[in-house]
Image (cartoon, rainbow, N blue to C red; front, side, top):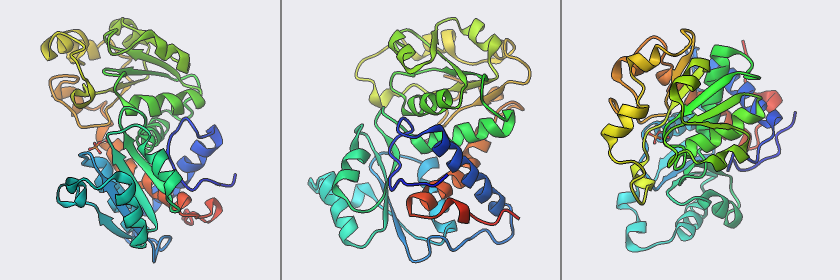
Amino acid sequence: MPWHRKHLLTLEDLSLSEIELIHAAAASFKKVLGRRVKRVPALRGKTVVNLFLEPSTRTRISFDMAAKLLSAEVISFDAASSSTTKGETLRDTAQNIQALHADMIVLRHACSGSPLYLSRVLDIPVINAGDGAHEHPTQGLLDTFTMKEHLGSLKGRKVVILGDILFSRVARSNIHALTKMGAAVTLVGPSTLVPEWFTDLGVKVSHDLRGALADAEVVMLLRIQHERQGASHFPSLGEYTSMFGLNKTRASWLNPRAIIMHPGPINRGVEIDSELADGDRSVILEQVTNGIAVRMAVLYLCAGGKPENVMPVE
Ligand code: CP
């Protein structure tokens, strides 16, 4: 299947075939990462600017590594020392970066819709690295890629997403990808953070943690997004943990083969206990590693790379 997109803005936009195409390209790039010489020339001569206006560890570093492994030049924008602190707008900042001959912009921003906005005012590809509570498409792609590595096809697989769904861009991107891939998704958490209207997206909503976990083949924990919550949605963190935190007792309700996921950053002892985050069923660090191959695939395809030319597999 050909790839026609210049930008990656949402997973809501993508078809199942497009998601599968990115996963297939990521699988090829992952094989390359296992070699002694990992760098490939696909983006030689191109410059990728990581325009991160919100904090990030995993996404920023893995986009940086992905672009470098594709032989691009990478410039990481330092928001704190930039002219945004003098009032320069996002549009002006991005248009100036384009005028400086950047070939792609990877944007993280607190405002939902900011990557879509930039895609309309720039000529170069824009990749969404997380916009407000809207979407985090490469996270959804790397999460579903990791699930496929463990479970094979996700058709009919039972995935529980547990935590602050309302303010989570990771949840939204995963919901769009997982429902297209045929998974049965159940959202669990307090009703203030998991409102019933999420069922409009083709998922179940449950406040019965034990029942949901007993069925799950994957449980994905999400942290409480304090930075996006204008008001408190539960009495205290301690009460949230006592009702919904994943601890050893609750993990015993899971199928022994179920995997435990978290996009990070983890708040240990809040949404998940350390012994589970670090335990045998946790694939949290695999998710992080897979972020490199998935982001290589996204950068490659959005830069105009042909899917059929994606790395010789052997
Ligand atoms: N998962 C994720 O987006 O992590 P960072 O905020 O560290 O990039």
